[in-house]
Image (cartoon, rainbow, N blue to C red; front, side):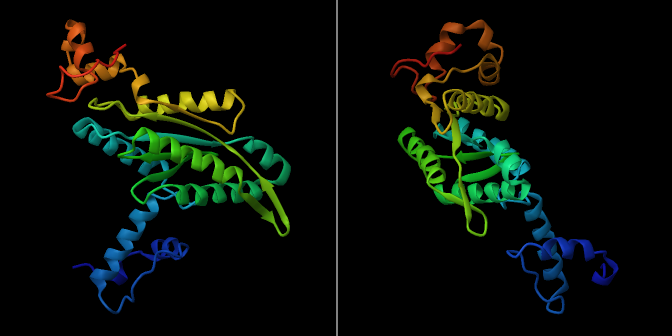
Length: 256
């Protein structure tokens, strides 16, 4: 049995004390409960972005992998959105980095309010955010993406007393191929392509890679069918888009 006073918990307590959402019980109540709360609190902090309070990139990748497994097993649709603040460098250059931080925090709060509790919002890096929406059909995905764009477009951001600015975001999204065990990097790349389209066509726009337009890559094909992916291309084309046991119904999804 290790006594609490023999553990070096000062740094851990200091870290947890900076987060108002985490509260430690009185150490006198139960040493076991106290230590468990410290461990749980540190685990929670390790998955959060320090500035915005959203999920960090580590947590994002873990949720992304779980969502891919779910889509491969059940065929339920899932959407990944990449959200990037337009002209963010100009905000920093004009108003300073503190104002930039306030913009990031305001966007994070807006994103969290635009999605369901089951969805995951993460700070992907810099001024870019990611949103994972499991069990998300096409109409709902388009609605959420537009809600995000319009909410932020209409939201004044306070950067100092009596001073506000307006910002916009560009949104790109892609659905995970159903019944296919894809990878996080391939899914993110598809969403990034749509984000680039939104940026290149004027910003403050939404572009989604809709499910009927998704092409299963050679890498995904190989993960799904193994050596059969190279030996039976006609059969692959007939089943890649259909759930197991439903190969004869409907037009086949293209596989390229």
